[in-house]
Every structure is written in structure tokens, then in C-alpha cells.
Image 1 (tube, one colour):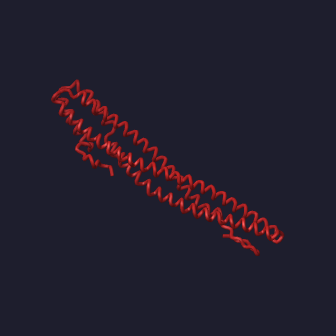
Image 2 (cartoon, helix red, strand yellow):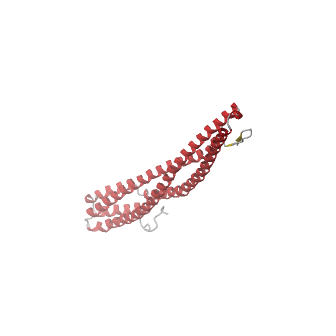
Image 3 (cartoon, one colour):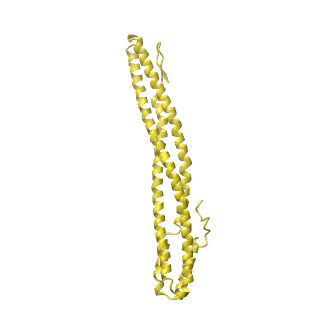
Length: 260
């Protein structure tokens, strides 16, 4: 803190230094806001992938039923249908989970981004207050340089009041913004890491069955009408083994791996 000499001493806070702390917090807030928007974009892509896989699953089950006309192959194809439906149930559970997650995250993100907007307005007010303080300080220093005893007592009192009020405004806005911005940062640290972890776990589980495996199943289904019953049963058994290796067969419906 600096002070002037003479009969009227006025405390002058360092506005630039006070503003540094808030600027740092604002920078961190803007970084969190950018991460929030990226997260929303990724969440949208996540739903698009789910919808595409769901469409592939429906097409696959339809193809299985249509091509399961050979009596000996019906049971084998029915096994595949069961597996696919089991996986579909898991996908529905996952979709429900992410749907709830999306609802919660949307509300929280809306509140979070709203807070940022409010505090940006506060930062603007703080900038204005710092500028007012700088102007008041400049007027005071000009009077001091020219000789404060050459001005009236009333003018000196007015300058003192302006500078004091500007200092109080800056200190008050700075303290309030620091507290509120820190609360926003704490909220983002509490909200975003668990959300990202959950989505990452769900994505790992979802991608265990990729489009490559679906293409393989679809090709075999399309060939069913041109192969013998024995060949169909053999290929069906092989497919079931492949699905089992992907940890889909006999997976508990209520506790799919990778879903918290």
C-alpha cells in the first residue's frame, strides 16, 4: 500500500496487483469452460455412436430371423439372437445410465456456465473500478505535485473522497470475485472429473463390440442361404465363441463390465 505525505493521508491500494489474482482465477475458469464445451461435444458424439450401433443391432437380428429357415440351423441362429438381445439389453441399460448422466450434466453445466457469465460481468465492474481508482490516484498525484496547499480544502476533500471510494470499490469487488470464482472452480473440480471418468468407462464398454465385429456377423448372415446346415451350425458355433471372447456372452445384464 502507498500513502501520500501531508496533512491529508490517503491509502492507495495497488489495483494492478489486486487484479492479478482475479485475472488468474478468470483464466482458470475460461479453461474449465472450454473443457465443459468439449465434454458436451463428446457426449453428443457418444449418443450418435449408440444410435448407430443400435440400428446395426436391429438390422442384425432381423437378418438372423429372416435367414434361419433351415430346421437344424434354427436353434443355432436362435442362440445368436439371444446373445444379440442380451447385448441389446445391456446397451439399453447403458443408454439409460448415460441419459441420466446427460440430464444431470446438462443442468450442472447450464448452472456452471451461467455462473461464469455472471462473474464475467463482475470482472467488468472490477475493471471499471480499477480504472476509476487509477484516475482518482492520478488526480491526487497531480495536485500533490503542483502543491496541495494551492487548492481549496473542499477540492482536496473531494479528491480524498473519490480516491477512498475507488479503493473501497476495488477491494470489495476483488474480494467478492475471488471468493465466488473459487467456488466455481471448486464446483468444476467436483463435477467434471467423475463425469469424464464415467463416460470414458462407458465408451470402453461400448466399443468392445466394434463395427468390425458387426460387419463380420452381417457377412455370415448374408451367406446363410448358400451354405449347408452343417456348415451353418459350425459357423454359428464359431461366431458364438468369438462373441464369448469379446465378453458379451453370458454377461450379467445388471452388471456389465466397465459401467459403474
